[in-house]
Image (cartoon, rainbow, N blue to C red; front, side):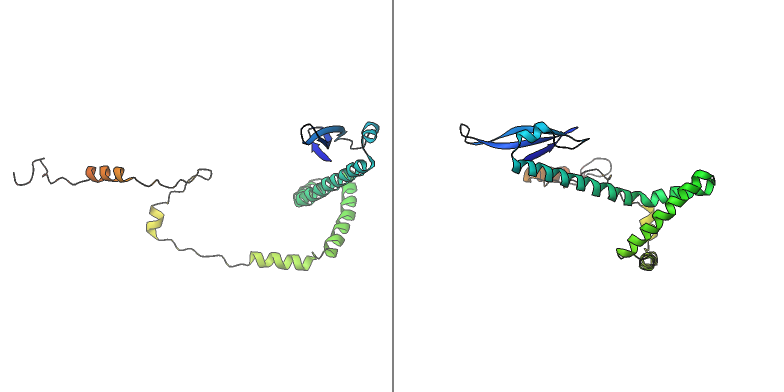
Amino acid sequence: MQFRERRRVIQVIRTVYDPNLKRGRSELVGKIDKAAPVVTDKLQKSCTPEELSEVLSYLDDRHNRLRNEAVRAGAETLPAQMREAAEYFRTHRDGDARAFATDIRLAWEELKTALRGSGFSKNKLLKKAAERTEAPPVAVQVTAEEVAEPAEVPPAGAPVRKPRARSAKTARVVALNTKVSKADEFGAPPGA
């Protein structure tokens, strides 16, 4: 079975061998709504038991994948959300703030326990952060000539092109055009 995720639906496709074409062809078995991914009666009737188990395992895997992505996104944005919450509590001291603070304290204790259990204890993390910040800065010495003439840096998105090799004919023309004339400053040939 194949599953194609479209804008609002998941298409369930079966490959069937066609003896006239002597190859397989795709056959649409049914659709599943992405907003409510359940197997409908129509889809269940048109699938064999093996295909139905394949559809159900696909939906379970998809659900787990989406959940893991959401959890990861929550962990990535948590530091920024915590800073925004700190700003909120600096400026608010009402009943809503008290209720939020209670929920946050409970969640914070649960998060600390999970961090310690995963091997990310406070001491280890702070020590590694201190090691990163204490790395000695690399001193770069620049001479006055280097500062006077800034290097040309190509734009970030500009493609870098290698110069083309000149052909023998082009090289002869360039050589003829660059010969130094023996004429003096007034244009007269030498010895005249």
